[in-house]
Length: 599
Image (cartoon, rainbow, N blue to C red; front, top):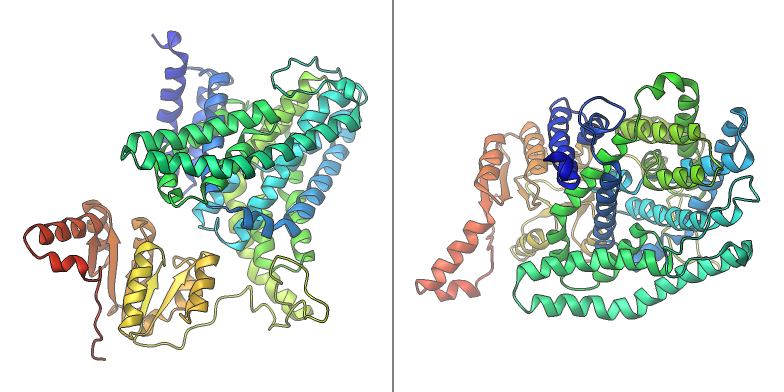
């Protein structure tokens, strides 16, 4: 019976309704996460009908946060994290301070105490891990400089919130609340008798100890475990080892060092990224990451009371203004002050214009310590729901604002090219180069190539195709959005266009009108389909070659206008059959051989 199996009922109701409303949202061209939130409201205690177990839903959602941060860590090296410290650290600190002051001001207008204002402001200052990462992943920005800055900014915010969660119980009495009795849930929990500075010092020491353990011990043990399991040949054991490491390190970090589960998982992924098997680890954990991140949005929706929109209308609007407008302006000004392009400042502003999981934790702790009134928790929940719903619109707004701001910046003063993030320049070096107004932020310049091939993506498949094109002396350019890959291509003398080929300006810069062929080496068939349509509109005669992983993807791409669609599994089977039937020499030939063709 359903009431005897609350875990199963919660998972079934959460995922089932999330699928239904996510599909409806997608049908009406609304982000699916809106449907997930609606599903949460329907199974929550504030609407009639079935009520899921909120505590179980929150724990399931926490697993989603762990797996998502683990996945980000797999694509985010320690070098990347250190490369953005110059802006992420001061930027996050200043933005947290500004948002907290705005929260204190609203609390004062509502007649709350200073302690309530501090908790409220801190809760409004920190962005949601899941929402930010989902936004970056959908726009393929995780591995770009903008993505690294946003993720680094998020990590600093998480560290600041960990410190706040440890300090609040110790400071509750001073701020007018009720000190919390230490329950020793953490093996290294801190008694309030240590004093404020003692608690701060020990907390920082615990975080530093965790980082040291991961860099010294984890760097050796985690890759060794992966390679050992990979040599057993069992895919099941490998998948299990990846999940065990992600969840185990996150849980151990929280219990032993007082570090957040998300931060522990991030470091586990970052250490694992140094292994040659990191790509396989990312693929194996992807399905569970997606499923549990959906449960996160469902759990958020369960906390929301739709009637609060009526009873707390004006305070909710003020809270939402702090989250969406106040934080965005602060982030924009900070990024511009560090001489980064307008496009980067706008993207980070939109990414951070929402709140999430840490905000809920702070709100619950504040209410438990008698610092924050229950009205404050309701405002935080409403602000989280509405800001998550509106976050996709924020990206549309910044896309609309970008040309106007670039044009205005160009009229007022020449725009300086952004400096690379890293060590300060040597004495006498030029810190920045004068560029044409708006040049680095506007559409990329159009290539002078004609009769060329446009290669989309330069991963494992694209790099082989590119090497063959180069060897055959056929003119081509690459559209790619990963900074590391772009740098490598430029150093090899290959012409590139930076960005996502689905973007009209980026694709136009590759001169599809004058191109001879389009080669889609990206694995995402849906994104490839958009590019095929764009290519056919620009040049009906262009020869389109794409890749696929299933018969359905082949039919999808051919239906959109692709001339040739190569399914990887078929080519592998063909190679094996040729070897088995006696044509072993084929195995020594290149995967793809392209010979020069007459103009």
